[in-house]
Length: 312
Length: 294
Image (cartoon, chains in turn blue, yellow):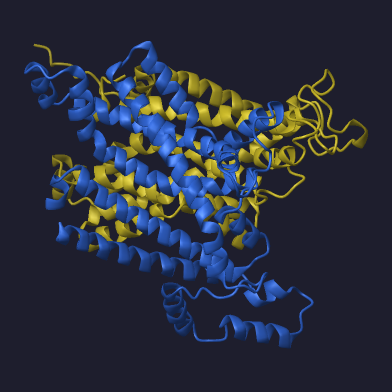
């Protein structure tokens, strides 16, 4: 087990390093001088030169790169051009909102998706199976902001069950009211993905010999499905959930915009609109960290779900 | 004595056509998806003929009208006809979606086939790079790319294409490795065929169906990404109508008129659902692992 964890950790480090390099390159392929872009056409030569110095843009490219890497890992992500606050502080302030939203949506997706997928698989080619398949296909066709807008239209405007702009803190009711619509809009789309992979993984497992053996020796059907088959179908489900978390974090940007909910999404769009380069760079670092961490957890989850994985 | 007449082998194109037809029949839903998608393409092509109004004509006296005989789908906050804007908006969605998916398909498959064909270190490094790209949320990568390059049709196509290369590289690589060991490739080598000839002439046709099916599913994704970009203000610049941009404008006026956001939302949903129906049905048909699972 230790060797397995160490190997995965090493791979995570390599990925982190690669994506950080990508971020560095991305921020620097912008046509034009960032200092000029930030200050606009009217800025004096001295002001631009001063800003270049402050951003470290006057240094040789290799020095910029090593400084960036060291800074990224130390948590020194520079200072926002707009608010003059350290980037890391701004990011960490809204991060819990985004994590809360993605975690609640993912749990919702799993709680709805796994049983629906199992149900469809054991009722294969019946009417209910078709209904589950078509509705999950429809679910994953939804652009996340469309799902959000429709929920907002129905449950906040047509029916005044939820506030249009959610309260930010306080009681459990306020929390419940602020999280429900965003989490449901993302959760339903997640559920569509989870349903589909659960169904196809279950179909594969249910045709295995050991399932027939279990039935032949008299194991009750429910135990076969939920204990034997589902356990063996877990690996592809975990893979998809892990991969989907990346999509979910991307989708949450749009959901946060629709529900004007604080989070990484609002911060990102603000930084994009104002060309706040240090902020953008910091945001890409935090997304990278999240993605690498999720991948690492997915890999470790394989090890727990299927002891054979560790041997490979 | 008569010489046995060899039944003429079907031409590759005819073979491809019959196989495609069979694949469509495996899952009838593919036909529905295709039919809807073809209708959308026709509506987009004939938008200038079908549109009752100019999509950019403003008429402030007629603003925010609900659906009526004059304006079937109502008007927006500038008094522009929603139906005409939907029809023209389809063009942007389709052009950006198709161009970026084609580019990703060609570049991604080439990368995947090269990696699979060469194997060894080339393969490891390339696929590792693809995995890293795949791990990063593609919507966020697209947002940042477009914001930095500037929101023009060109740059949006480039950004969406870049984010959709890795899945094509992945899907092209695995079958290339499997086919590389088959007899007909060895035979080609023995005959002295060049690598390019073997890959392009003999491996590509074998993996093409899978790539095309992936293409239809990623086209859905590209259209969704374009709409998402436009929704946050990084689409083709107004007044050119885009569905994502229309939803954005509709969302800003959502308390005055709910149809404004709803109509383009439904349009996008229909197109993406059709493409998913199409691609999903075909995938079942060509994936040997799923055969008979209907």
